[in-house]
Length: 516
Ligand code: NAD
Image (cartoon, rainbow, N blue to C red; front, side, top):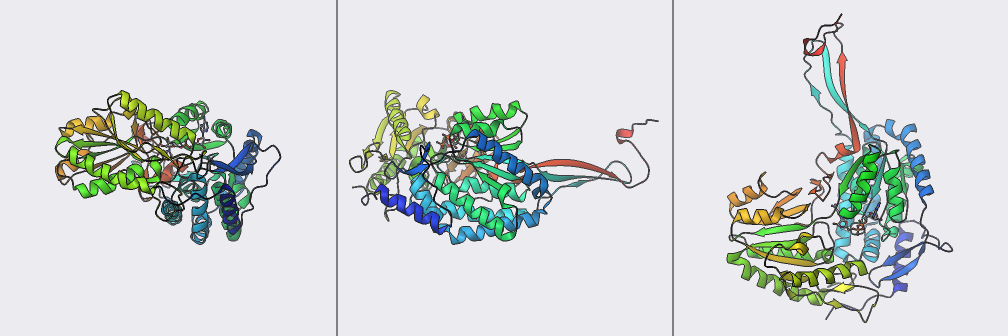
């Protein structure tokens, strides 16, 4: 039996308004003939109508952001810029539960994952405040006497941020906190599925800016709407960097528009993540790591585990244990606010249709559904899409396995040699996250090496999802190549100038060239 009864749409609308209220963000008015709506996947129904911005509003937002950048923000010392983000971190701590409430209502995440997502925002605030004193340039020895050679880092200008529904607040904060301390202003187009969380984040940031005396008005703008808003940002030549998170299809549309005007882009796109399970693996770790990575967030993470490549010696046991764990999950699908719920709803009908189609194609390609796949709670909420996470045994890596299906479907495939496992692992268009479960150090090192996994994230003895903010996050191939969050990802939000300073009074030319 699925978990507790679902809340009503009216009660969700009340909870959303109350959470906004506690964040001191005015609940949006209900404009006549509104083109948009706030919606909850918990019931699949609209909470209330909501205005969408026009492409003219995007132009206006970029103009204001550009003015603020030029007039004040780029010249504000980086550690002073960090004070805004420091204050934002404090406000996020105070409103952690409120933001998590909105994430659950709009994205359908279970409570603990929603709280975890807000914690990720708090963590990136701390990291970005530290970064504000560490935007280091290097000094290199000059070949010329009496000369100094160095590099300095400057802000880019207006950064456009497009985000996906499944991490409605964390991805914004990865981009915005770092972009702001680097001296940029930000225009944000959130997913049309999560406008309320966006308004709450924007409101808290504006409060932080006002409290520390920063130019709130142009520092950050939010523009609600669909793909036409994203396209307007992509095409505006004043948007120096477009950081876009979403499907590979979105990236394919956005990237050429930015490239056509010689702008910069940072893409964080779809994944099709796999774990290799070696014969020496600790199977307890495999089962726990795989089930969280594959079924958590109802399979709607970019880092969700979608392929399990298991050595034939342990394939049967691993499959049996994972299927047993999935059987227990069946009772824990339901209201994401429910205490015992582990799997909330899919965000909408499109995800459900994609899951159905993937399961049918998998069967046609020789697969066998071992557990899950059924839709549940249909009678209680006809417009919502709750599913039992599915495990499918596949004879090999067929066409459907090479695609990202944004739903909880885990394909299990056997392998004989590590070379074969790595070939299967890398034999998909995407390159985001990967894992190997092994007690054999040499195998682990081979997987981590240049000849191993081709992904941006490569783990040993943990699953593919749940990255920490301290590292650089992103992936290769169809995942888009971008890196965000920790390490030196801040460099994507700045431009580098190389400076040569002559303090010697002579003018020796480089490479020994003589002239005049
Ligand atoms: P989506 O591509 O449908 O939408 C993402 C965002 O792009 C939304 O704001 C949307 O309005 C906008 N958009 C869509 N088409 C556009 C276009 N042609 N021009 C401009 N903007 C456009 O993705 P989604 O369903 O919201 O999210 C799920 C996808 O995002 C999955 O593929 C997932 O793997 C990916 N994702 C990737 C990462 C990552 O860091 N790599 C993180 C989260 C999600």
